Image (cartoon, rainbow, N blue to C red; front, top):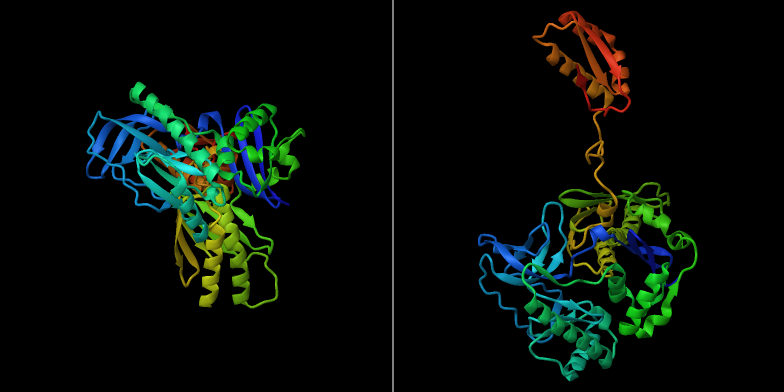
Length: 479
């Protein structure tokens, strides 16, 4: 089955699934209240300068102040001509500065900003404040040489820079020139807006999810783009005619009841939120994102092929490496990542598993860095985290366990409740006391009535156990 892009549109939510051979490969959600600001360009005002960090907080008109490394230079490309870096003069509080959001807000942290402005097109990224040409590292060497010669023929302004994106591979001179001219016109319009507006203000807003995916992922190897909303279908076709007219014939309007369910993708989406992922061999991965890092544990599970321990570990690890890379991409997990493969004795097996992981990760659009694999089968790596994850947007912290995933046992809480009862009665002369608890705790206390009788005898008070089914299991109320 070929590669498809499926777009499901609801009034409260946009969902995009990229499917390869019937398998969910990428999945994105966007809601009006959670719309990404990555890529947006703002005219901001310096709120505070932190010389010790070489950074500043910038007011861009949002609730959280943006964080700007003053010397930051984003480099996701290989220089063809030496890029003249943007000049970062010393800035002071109250000064205005043009910035672009490069990383979403996470938790209490505000968005990460950069003064290196980039306007992304289909094939190129315009760097209006830099001079020079760069080419994506993902493009093959032979194609890089062709693109260098093509760019040498283009009559483009010398005071701006361009990065050639991976999608430009194999594209003709006219297509690149058309993209460059569009971006140059866009920048000219933005220059007028910059002059007219005062800080803090929004200068340029990045495309929404649907158009962003079309721009970045709708390539020649995609056989169909299917959308289930008539209004969105017409909007997408207008966009395609302007920028990707050669692919417009691949856009289809879905007239069925439920696009993602009918394509058997809804079931796969539900698995995105599960911590345990099974492989075809019955082995499985356990994926546990924590505050500081993401841990992926590989387990042999029900793997039953007749082979040695070493061969079993190698086979499972090879499958797990491919699936781990897919899950990182699918769940958009970032930060520090540790993958715990099953122990392998042979060095060549460890190298092969690492190579398979690197090859699978080469499909990933996010930046990543792998340190290698240890003799214990541990792989340490980092992956760029730009947006909030699908899981973060879809789930909230459990109000019952407060995100721990566990609550204290009934035995532990029954002992604690009696301790609190003794503290409450100490030094008081009470005839009667009510102890209100979850029914599970009362059941546990009544298994050993002696402890309760001892308290009654010691403090000469009658203890009434009051059952409250809606009480939290860790809640103890004494009155």
